[in-house]
Length: 473
Image (cartoon, one colour):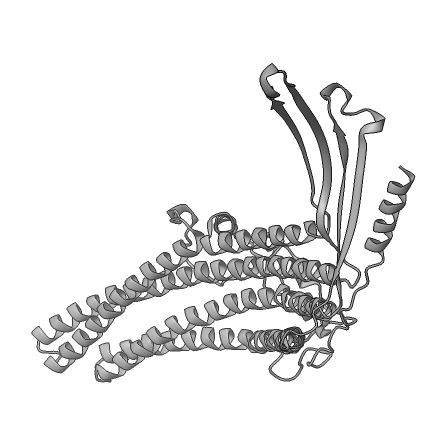
């Protein structure tokens, strides 16, 4: 028993003596400026990073209907379900690799009985007969690799980093889904407004056409006036058809994202001023906030996994030491099987070293290093892409209020011009072309204001998303 304890202690020491041959990981320097961009196109920023990613989407999206739709999408979207399943797959792969670091212990027992019949001896017919019995019970491990060089530990580390990368991918997919659902919902609202404008214009132009036809019948107007008024009606009819289609397609896109049909009670009837989202965000100057984005963290975990694979490839050059051990009991009688004197044990070890493999291990190491270099480039590109996403969103945010104000002012003046032109035509001091042109300008201005308000609302959604917001409810 003392010998057994000594052997087990030695094995434990060998297990703990394993070292890692993976290179020391150092996070690459971010290839972007330390501060987010500033200038005429950008909104004023505050000190720090603003902690936008800590703001839950219930706080950012203020409309209860939109909140309900986002919640349903997070529960039913099929792409997100696939991503979650892939995270679970990565988790089980990691657990399997981690389990390989421990010895697999098997147990078993045997029982046998051999009967010897009588053996005749000459004419006397004398002989001997009997039954020989044997019993055994044992437990042990076979060919367990002692991880002296850290190969198995490096593989476990790589699997763990792959799992973490998958989980960050799930977070990135969640944020993207929240942003896509909100954008689709707001787009539906804008299409509803655009359709309403087209329908109102069609009704107005239809009334104008009737008046023009009556004037022409009374000899006041001309056939040209009637033809021009009819043109306006048909143009409005075409726009009504187009926006009706666009509204249906926006609904289809929203249903796909949500994963089920969105009920009428959750659909917006108007975009209005776009106040279904917060009007501002606490965006800071520090670009380090980008390092917390899930897609950037996903790329970094992939890099760390590639770094661990180098350690496994290096360890493969060293000898493999395996241990086989067995302990148990053996007896010729079942009743005495577990008596102290029946205890048996044996242990053995083996060492193997590849002398020639045609460069397999060398190329595996070179491949692991190349994968690490590619992962570094991917990580740096992820940071650069995140920086551009935020910079673009900030550039739009810095000027969108001016665009909305200009669109509102344009509409006000266009409607005034249309009203005055119509009065001039009714007074007979202008041709029908003047109010016709003014009405077209006013209609275009109405649709332009809807588009500007949608751009402002979706820009806020984009800014919230690219700064890492949308993960927390």
